[in-house]
Length: 215
Image 1 (cartoon, one colour):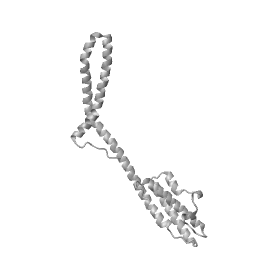
Image 2 (tube, rainbow, N blue to C red):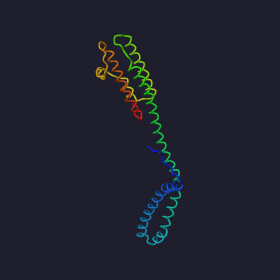
Image 3 (cartoon, helix red, strand yellow):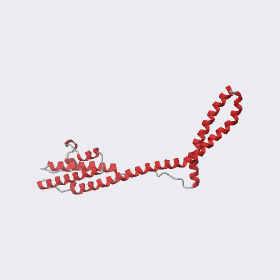
Image 4 (cartoon, helix red, strand yellow):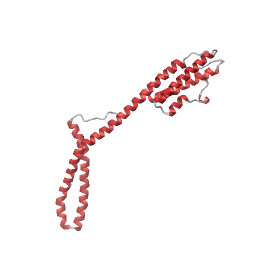
C-alpha cells in the first residue's frame, strides 16, 4: 500500500479542493432544476397566471441554491480532504505496524529455530550410552518449553502453537527416511525424527510471519 499522496503545490490543492466541492454543488443544481421543471409543469397547467412569475424566478432560484451549496461545499471540502487522507494514512500505518510486528515475531522465533538446529538437532548422540539419550531428551524438552513460552509471548495463534508442539505417533515418519539410523536404539531415532518434525513446523510458522521468507 502506497503512502497517500498530498497536493504538492497550491495549484494542485486548489484543483483537489474544486474536485471535492463542485460535484455536489452541481448535483444540487440538477436537483433544483428537476423540482422547478415539475413545478413549472404543474403551474402552467393549473395556474397560468403564475407561470410567468415562476419562469422569471426559476433561474434566479436555481442559481441561488447552486451558489449557496457551492459556498458551503467550499468551506467543507478542506475538512473532507483532510479526513480522507487521514483515513488512508491510518490504514497504511496499521498495515505497516502489523508487518513490523509480524517480522519481529519471525525474528524471535528464528533465534529459537537456529538454536534448536545447532544445539539440539545436530547434537551427537551415542546410542550405546543412556546418558547421551537423557542429555538429548533434556535439551529437546528445554528447547520446546522455551519455544512454547516464546510463542505465547508473541501471541501466536493456537493452531500455530499446536502445529509445532503437538504430534501423534502417526505424524512422525519413519526415522530412517529422515536419515536417523541408530541400530539397537530405535527410541533415539524416533526422538530425533520427532524433533526434526518440530523444526519443520516451526519453519513454516516463521515464514508465515516473515515478509522476506527468511528460511
